[in-house]
Image 1: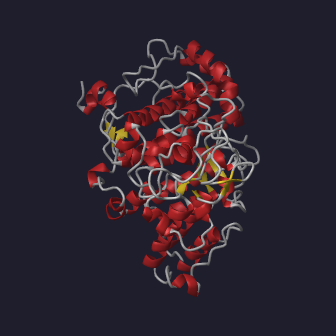
Image 2: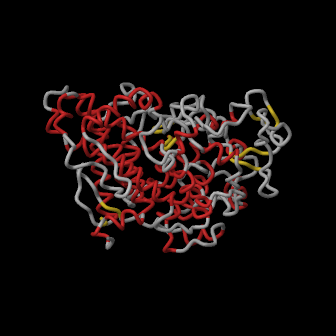
Length: 506
């Protein structure tokens, strides 16, 4: 997503925000504008102003509070895919992995802040719709569709991780109380529906921006999370121009960015961003063009697979070695040997994870897939929604919808397993019936849980899957001893509590 958009528009966006009197109050997370100086009348004078604000809303996804760093930790390290112990000296990762987040935790506060700052940009554009009468009608529809798509996505992140959150739909809001999750989901559905009806199709859209099918894919996901299975299937069936790519690994390397499987991804470029910019806690200062994910996961040994994760793989499943570096495997552009040939920059990063005796280290999104020398400045785009997820969601929706077919649900599972680079035995065969029979709804659901854990590991799906299925208290304590029902959601940041009297703060 938006690798080119961000580089091209960052300077123009900065000038526009100055003209609009934009300000960011670090002490009040939701008060993202100066109500006394914001002049939204300027937006109606030139559609490029509104478009630059929309482009700016993407940049929050690149921030370390989201997919630059903390976003991955708050998804992967809170799942049973990764074990709690790491050799990291970073206190944030310990709080996350051990489920000890508090109201002033940096990671969850930055996650909250970046979501609302992105929402703020979108709200300015959405609330200015009446000023767009002189703009081209198609361009206006696409612009508003994009703004409402991005707003919906940020709220989806918030509601799935915080539960009840303030519902802000105006650019200069008064303090808002916590909305129920049902109220937040209602806005998300409306926004994704609007986006699906107004965004261009894949053939007309610029790579990196959402398409109508991207919106339908997320809409289907939201319906699924709300157990509205018929509506979920109807939305997911609108995703028709995407497909599984032949090689699983191409979903996690630079070469495969914006491929036929990717419905939505966040753009990073190690050639552009710097560490100083990425460490910045204030969005908009610097390019925010790099991610620390590769350094954290395959460089600094901050991710160690749980025994449970590795045991979940069936024998000879090639997705194991496509997801994790295994001692003896080749890596990098010159075919170096993992565990034998060190990083050619002399850093000593490459090799078995030093945390314990596991010879496994995260491979997805690693710079080592294509480079012999590791760099802190990661540039691989995380894929936020890909077609394999769509297919697996269709399996679940088909299984539980009214009049659904077990046979059809199983066929969706097999579609993912029949990827040319995977080619695992199909469900329903004698071989699979011995370990994952699929004769009943309960058995097929067990197969879905298994397939999602394998296919989508380290992609931020597992922990929210377990929570929405009601399996979190059953599964997470196997690896996360500190997990309890009251840890399902992140605490509302103390900064927001202190500045928002409706939350009982100061």
